[in-house]
Image (spheres, rainbow, N blue to C red):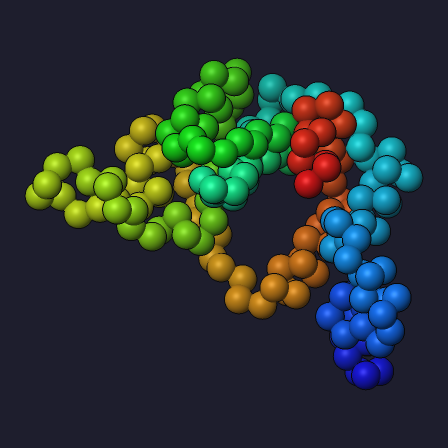
Length: 183
């Protein structure tokens, strides 16, 4: 138990509650990143973060149809990670979101797509003789450049830990990212 607590730290109550109270205490929505978000608020990192036209804007995508599709807009400059926008929605195709992004007056940097962007999608072939395409191919065909497919992180706790380490380095625009902050 002590070893698990040392390894899991904040996730201990969620994964291995020792009392009924601990089980309910760990069920708080957003608890995975609550300490990091509290740090950002306390240190004024959730504030007005304007777009810097001299810096490229990167996107980070998480696909969703039945659940929420989300896209974070990110800039890196002056040793700062800046989240300057957040787009979410459901029941729309990826091309809809790419079209919405193209309406923004940004110099695009890298577009980071999740691991499942390389999975072929039924119904995506343009002709009966063509194989189904991947989301990566569909977006590239629509003009998206600098696509990077992020490999799947097999261990959920590794992904959570990486996010916990990265998040305190971030500045988030309170208005443009309000829905993302709630998530």
